Image 1 (cartoon, rainbow, N blue to C red):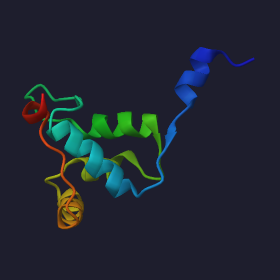
Image 2 (image 1 turned 135 degrees about the vertical axis):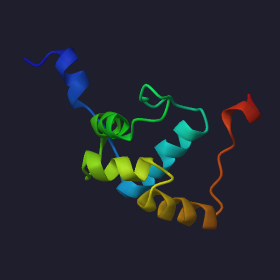
Image 3 (image 1 turned 180 degrees about the vertical axis):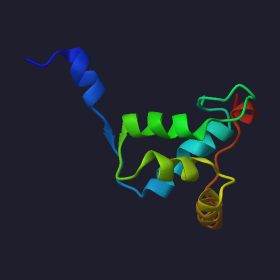
Image 4 (image 1 turned 120 degrees about the vertical axis):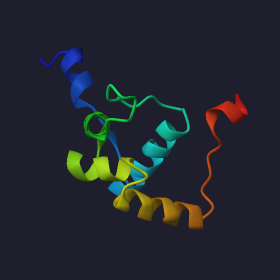
Length: 99
């Protein structure tokens, strides 16, 4: 029999959208203070660890390496997705402005 502990680590939320969209949304949530992403000692987001956490939480067809580029909204891949979301009016206010 499989324990609940094991099931907990096997169950994932199925992501229907593209990996770029998942990276953008979670990267944006981290950027705006809604979620806390893992950080390097210098305080910068550790996108490699962040991608691993996201891949462990969501069922999504991508690698940690690719996802880390989408989570980084300032990377080339990330900024392309930012532009697409911005062009379509996507906006989440910073947590501090609505708290």
